[in-house]
Image (cartoon, rainbow, N blue to C red; front, side, top):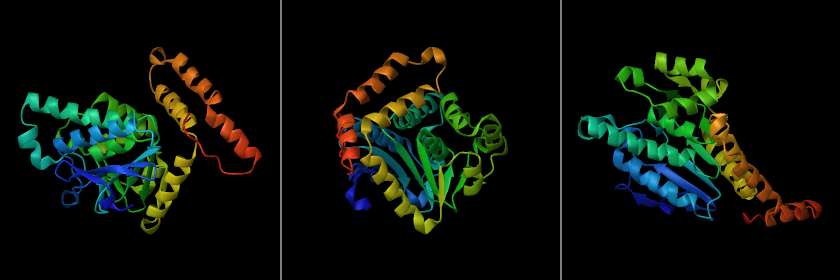
Length: 270
């Protein structure tokens, strides 16, 4: 995937677009290890929300430019300008939460494509995705305790759902960097690849997902999202309707016919 195929937002620090059914968000601030400013958070959230309702988009992939970092979190150089008062902190927190929530609640599969460092807000972004693939040289950390930062319930809850409370505490209490192998062992990432294999693997991953039935994937995503909610907040009727809709769909007919005819199905998402 060539970045020239994508459109520029936030003064070029966010790239976004759709290429062969895959929506792309690229954090394009490599000289600062893809640190993210408030304007970048806002632009990225807007583009994610636009792709959520685009029928052409079958999945979303998020990555950082430059090959040295997925994202290194908030741009600390802008803290004095963007986070030096209670009101500014609240506005900044709202912008970051909106972006992470737009990714977490994206109704289609999402993939974090991780090269190099995945630090702080980068970790929050990665755990908001459904799947995480990384190179074997990637490094992960949440250095909030070294900066005196607070970390909200939603971000901790999403990380906890992946690695469990004991590892959440180790990640935050030590604030140290974890290797790609450690991230895999704790359940933080799905796959670890040699750097030279990551791009090809991600392309094949995306193709496989894009070829599958959108309504089936949407129902599975909705169910797994609700599993992270208290039982009193789960909409079981809505989830049951989504499952029923799969069986009532044209895609279910196409899937059966393709299986019998020993050909690849052509799903339409209806």
